[in-house]
Image: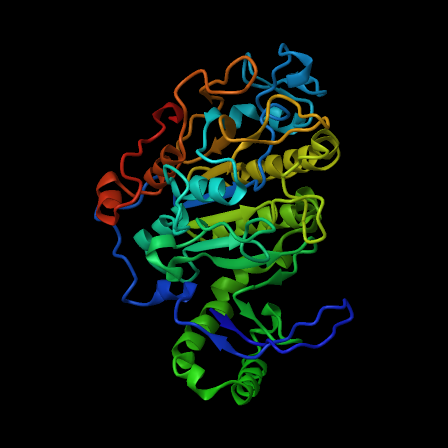
Length: 446
């Protein structure tokens, strides 16, 4: 990790953070080092040049979105009406009319399962394909880390996660969000995107006044670094030059600036995605896959919680599931995901991009005592599109109340195996890296 600034000062927002230089050898920039760069597979790349994961952290309700149960008892079905989709016989809820109108461009899985009901554990399982929660907390590598190792580094980081910091809950970050057993060198490169499109880079905390937009001014950056050197312990700077050069080269390259600059997008496109952090992050995600980044994870929010001071309206809707779904989560997901899907389609990117949208689990089919829904890892949904996915397909089904799969459960290992297979990571490659052993491709999607 590289940080600049860590002593405190008060800002107009009341924050008290500024920093001095901190450096650690285990950083995402290790992808560019020869010692950790993996050779490309002899078999070549799969149909997906890029993977674009839209991560709905917190657990979106499957019954209130894409797997409604209008014939279930009242204590299960919820208040939302169902609507027809473009796929014969398939209905969504009234919260997602735009996605219903383009169901013939996507595939839906209704029988995903997880093996834990905790956000951090379930998130780690879902993003790594682990068969259960790991007691040590050290999970296998994230799907993105595996692809990053397989592809190696290019002009841009091979694994980028769009969030303002490590994703997780109020307790701490998801342990399966990065390199895991391979080490922090395979963690994603984090980029935050605000509702205005302003960017922040959590792993390179620049002192006050230095922003990613100013990185093109080499003299300003070097002056700030020289000042930081004078403040920091000289012993901590022994590895700085090499890491600084790699970080600076990455962030100041024309390719990086072109990919990260949302100002290059027409105003109409930015408005179509909407002026929210999630909307602008999805637009940025499209730009990154267009630039050739192998694995991009767009996070709905950094935290899963909703009603906490630090929250940014994740999907953990214990207390007011139906109000939040109707007023915020449902309409926002419908608008942004439909816009993203349409944008990828119009630009011809669906041929080479696998789009996957999911969370770590669903929510309880039976409504709880306060008229809401809690965690439910026994059955939930995922949405797939592009890279050879057969549009209009529905894979699997849940039982009459949406409690359990009525068909073969789709496990996190199956999700990861399918993602990596589409990206050209063969079974032999996975065996050589000792990842996702025993997983199978979800052939029903193709």
